[in-house]
Length: 255
Image (tube, rainbow, N blue to C red; front, side, top):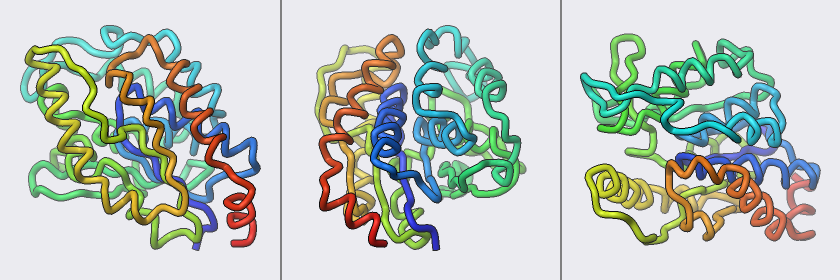
């Protein structure tokens, strides 16, 4: 059994708070023996498991815009994210899960059979892209003849995925239950409804964590607020630093 597991939620660009949290944990001497991720958490988790530092991960998305990473699509999605897949594929050195420095579990939703699926072996990039393929906005990703969409549809916080596999479980939730303001419009209303659905399916996963990092300030950011990536990173860093009490650090080291 792994000693320390870290679960990373979905959340779009808000997932960069994961990188900030991982930096704070590193500075306290805490590094995961296994990771799990959904959607944005799968992106950050795959890069971190591939050996990139939290600051390097934040830098990758510093000047990236939504328009650069997508184009208008068809056949199952408003936008095509093949540009983003190419971008991420250039960054990832690992081609398979086995190539990663740290074991990783990626959660996606099997659209054909209506179930949550956890990937932990085989080719890495398609599973990560499947995990962040938001329904309607992005077309499903097909793997071995099955269509997959965003893992957040059924499990936006993959803590229970890791609970049986580690002694100490740290969960980082980039999508706290906050009813933030929104602008009327097709995409905005669809995303808001989608977020409420995802936030409702994380309650049990939050309960199984030994430490839960859940920055309330994430409610101030939009899913695709890409221009504020570094700011979001710092929120994750500061929120985690505040939670790393001597009592918790002692508990982790005793396991």
